[in-house]
Image (tube, rainbow, N blue to C red; front, side, top):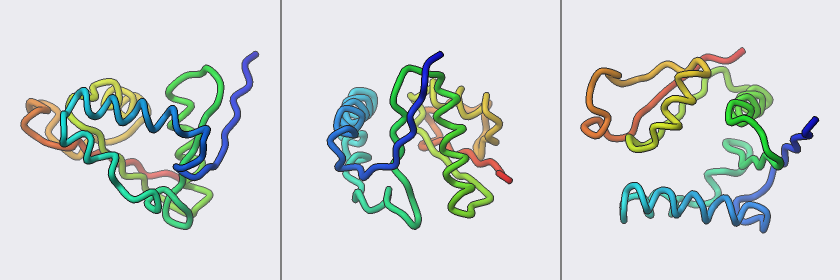
Length: 124
């Protein structure tokens, strides 16, 4: 059985560097310069008390990442989660829909005409 370690770290943590680099590459490849700008957000956005940067270490299911994020949000006292993804990240869209998130956009519309795709979910 594979053990999954959940670690709360700063975005600048050396263990987070590969994830940040891959995400920067992913955004830049899919969206060009606009995608690169997404990664220019201040690291403080991902710090308590209003945010968190989680690393899940070990092979595992993507749904487990969402479960851990929801668990962390509950620990902060949040009752609603609001997530966004970009239109070309169809994997993220499918994951959010599969884990019970409500799309806040017209799912029948061409995603490339919408801009960021927003989802929300009430958590207890």
